Length: 179
Image (cartoon, rainbow, N blue to C red; front, side):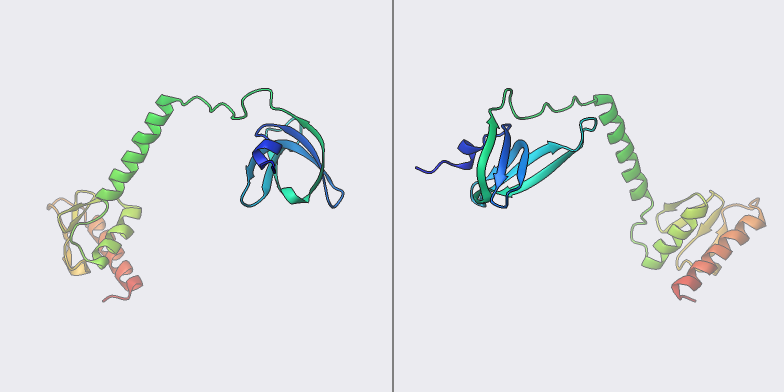
């Protein structure tokens, strides 16, 4: 009866092998695949580093087992403890980022409207109110999102703010190839 790779090379066993090319290879059996006839060996890169080298060897190319030591402890490394506060903070941050992304998407607006919003958003705080872009709570940009649709939200908005938004809308429409 032919031994399986699992019987010949148990997980976690320290082995030293000679290949049919005369090369000596050593490491800990990390994995094996009977159907592909492969053995994976794990060996440290250096004594001071936690980095490892994985080496895949065709089992049929092993000429001789020079040394084999059974695993002294369970092979599987202990998983690190999970810091629940850190996980919760990461989840909160990811939820906040996703919520902000959703809020930046206009519902039922044209592609051009969304592109103009995105352009303004990079420079000035803005938000959607239905299909209207509200910039700095002072300027409204309504459909069809051209310079003539940019208006003051109230009378005491500085003209420089209005002119700045008009310039941004005009520049973005030109960049998009729109009139």
